[in-house]
Amino acid sequence: MTHLARAFGALLIPVLALCAAPAQAQQETFRVGFVNPDRVLREATTAKAAQAKLEAEFSKRDKDLQAQGEALKAASEKFEREAPTLTETQRATRQRQLVDQDREFQRKRREFQEDLNARKNEELQAVYERANRVVKQVAEAEKYDAILQEAIYINPKHDITDKVIKALNASTAAGTGTGTGAGTGK
Image (cartoon, rainbow, N blue to C red; front, side):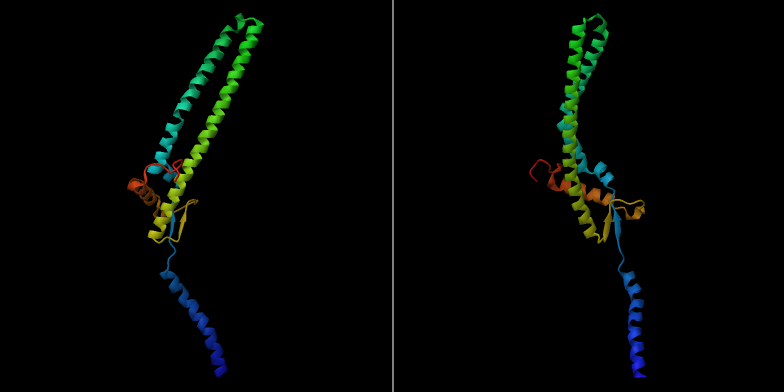
């Protein structure tokens, strides 16, 4: 009989442990938060500063390209008006000049777009890195177990985007400057 009691006791201990596990699990809740990275990029001071920096850096080239495009358009319209009165060689020469000007304009526009995209990626990367550090700080301070950046649905009570934006803006205002650190050796 003692052998049977020991076997029953050996089975009873794991069962009791399993019954106690849900009570223990209820005490340790899993905290999850959500951050909307698009909102961070739109609303955070750091992101706005990065956008202003890019606009300042590329505005002159953009204006120059627009002026060159307008000049090319005007030259093309002038050629269309004057083409019937030009000799065949004059028409061919002007057409060749317009094609060369258009090719040069397209090349400059492509270079501009490539340069702008590269710089935008650099600036966005710096903003993302800073935002991710702040997200981690908020998560650790408020004892979150997981922070999501993409979800099909999230209950608004789990959205900590406002807290992250406020913390990011506070860290920017606290002396780290409004720049993103790109191109400053940071």
